[in-house]
Length: 636
Image 1 (cartoon, rainbow, N blue to C red):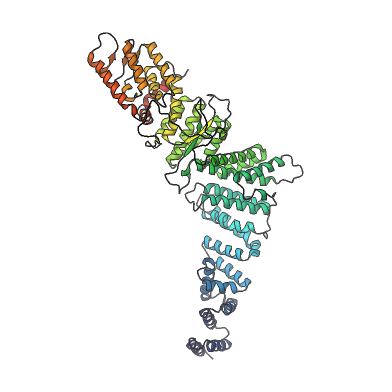
Image 2 (image 1 turned 180 degrees about the horizontal axis):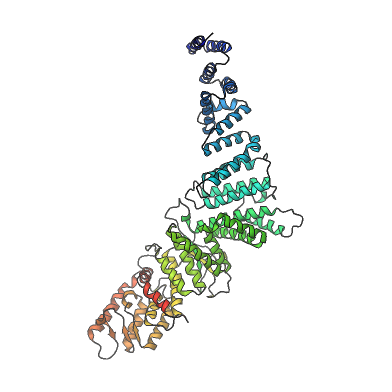
């Protein structure tokens, strides 16, 4: 019999599908008996069973087709559709047919399909389907899949940890492989994988490629660490599971304490080392994220940023409840990271290995991590160490790729650190740098305030949260957290300018004028400073400051200057126009005197202006003059 007979039998069977499916099957069975090597007949039988949703028979026929005609392209079109149904779960019928196939057939289909994929993502997806459906296959294919991804990453021209191969390795493949108890490889492999995963998640934290919830990413890393802990027979930390970040830190600190007196080798030091690194990065990243939300790509512009600065308030009182959001959590994150850092730098072997990973991972490029270390140095009183890191970080910011919030944060740290180290000129220089990056409209106080009674109350954390015991001068060695905004930072900066300018000798009229303007801030806090300026003017019997009526609006200061004029003992030049100078001596002309009193009246009317805005404008306008005063005269 020939092809025409086969066509006749096939045509006859098709004609009976609608009226008698059993007759159709009989005709197909007859045709298959006569033409046992006909793929067309078997495919027709398969399609018949699929159309009738006969899953068991469809699977049987497909298994026979795969056994006899696995190399035929038309067969693979159907197999691919079944595998796709398993991937997406969109076609429940085909998914059921595939799952009814013998396990060995399923594995072979998936493997052959995977090997035909050029795209590494599709290849991994199929291999993961294989290993998830058949865990026993992990021991055979798991390690080879991992090594394939590692090798592809090495040859990838994309010079970033956030490459596709690393992402597939860390987030897709390793969780499946490391959960299996059937993989028989050395602990060295697990440690290498954990290193790659830790680097990935630490970089993922501030990457442009962040997808989904970052908190979930840290949970993924902890789950992976837990799986590897089981593979490497680490000490059980079941009691710490599900607890807070600080609970996990307490467990590893206790394990580290035990390791220092462990002579029988009961404590796995690799467990301490890698867990401490993960806790360090997780705690530090969450700490910095809480201070500066802009490190997350998806954070909005309405979030508040905070910064830790030196507390310059001599009579500062700390509230028992901080107005700063999540202040307690911020402190926990910091203390966890600090504890992990201590573990890694207390043991010489740990420190050496951690420094090696630091260099390999290029942690000096992680701005968020460097900012944490800077805060840590300041906390520990190592201000020179903080300054060194800040200077290196400042150089990296010159490429212009960082957001202004990050640049401003670095400059704010430079201000505080330089001041603590008595580098007054440098500290003031960085204040001006900060002013150029901060939002000039960022004031939380009202546009008009009473300069006599208003005191800016800015938030702080409880004293115990950021204690700093440091022998360095100045003696105000406590730290506090403030909102990273102009109105919150200005009190700190005014303090620095006042201290820095008072260090300069001799005290020229320009310097006295600068001090007088600045002393208006938070009045009457700086009234003693102003009284010293006034005494100095009395001694000099003259005062030449042409910006006086532009920036002096404090009623108390105006009153004292008026009293000085009435005493007729001091020569005052307080206006830019030479014709309006006031000489408080006999024979003074009435026009100049009227100008003086009219100016006083105008400035009294301005006394309700916002002093914060006044000081900001003053610093912006007089930057060159103030800088000149600081640089041209030698500090005492």
